[in-house]
Length: 612
Image (cartoon, rainbow, N blue to C red; front, side, top):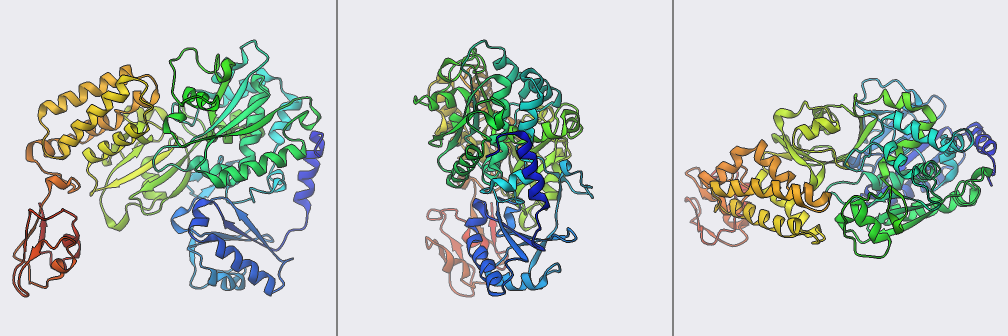
């Protein structure tokens, strides 16, 4: 039981003085690592270590996601004597022996991954690394199911500092001075939100962590909760103390079983140790945390809908004001912040607001975590200082576009964001810069698109997602977005007109002005941004009845040209048998039967098929 802050500091010191194994092997066991085959890799290393009787010399640590999702299963082998390490990707169980044999050297035949990150809090030299890990400081470095691993890395010391040396208003002032803005999408100043709730004179207040991550392609919050749950719990206790709340909730979607499991373990460990619950560390402050599960409704990411869901009602938003900070959960003042926002806080109090503010850009302090997905070569989780150019993320960390294709656009902000075209690739990532391009930061999804993506079709895809996830409470969202989707469908089918474009833009702006909540108000953003940034694609669909990317099936056709040598490969692979012709003679495609699947185009070795 850690019943005083001094005991916490003493335990951390003791843990760091303990004799360590000469080799530590960190094995990425987040959801992506497990799905890619991490469990057999862990078993293989355990068996090898046991067979060689190396238990005292080799420590195996099952960590959360390392962020290099493109090469899972991944491991890091650390020589604790000299501090050197090697990261291996695409690790197979049968490579365990060779990796152990290599010790601090490179195992032949294994894929070595270059480190692209550094840790500002540890005052490491960045050595040209693009990533700066604050939120992801412990992900991939500790066992998230062992409290002592977190304590050894200064865990709960920020909470001890706050509870023993700062008044609630001083805590809020520190957050304000840090410049930390909400990482859930809107970028509202975190300290200011806290101050609104703290100013309410009532004995009951609540703090909520929004872990209802719902953007397509986003997995930042899940990775943090799987890899470093105590960082969020510690921050929630700090927030509770600052605003005068004694109860916190983590609202998490039930589709995150591993994150839920590790949160349950972390909460129990913290309670048993006296770091959560009654009289935390003997300071007299009480704070408990409960989990509440969501059913996966995207609209419940909006704070008022989320609150209604916790209350047992339909997850529908309500008009603001009053804002939750004044009247939220069960009509009590309530602060809602997302996972990443909380994950920054312990570092801010350990190192100070001035330290945090030096990282990032003038109006956007700190770092931002992105889930880099789509057509990029190296999919994964990245954390970069605010102000980092998009180019450094997509081509530096992501290694450019798969299969040598041409980069076309990147979608930031999920269904609420917009598509940024290639000539804006040098844009620095911060809140104002992205809004200026018709997009937004959002929670951190970053979907990369190439030359084969049709931007009209992309807008239709995101709008379809919004339609599926809309609660249907307000007419602009329920009916207005349905009409927008119908117009986009018409354009993709070759039936759009110039008048369709006028109506598309007019209705989009009306929805933005009149929808009830943030989901509806931002739902036209993909439409407006693609219309503004890719007008030539809309015109090609309307004027020429062509889809330049070849993605809209009703606007393309496949025709066999004179390069055909009659090899019959296309006919043999056609799923609907619409290609006919004699061997060694030119073949023909029956357009009435063709389903535009493109199999013939992909299999032809003689460039004998044109896609028109």
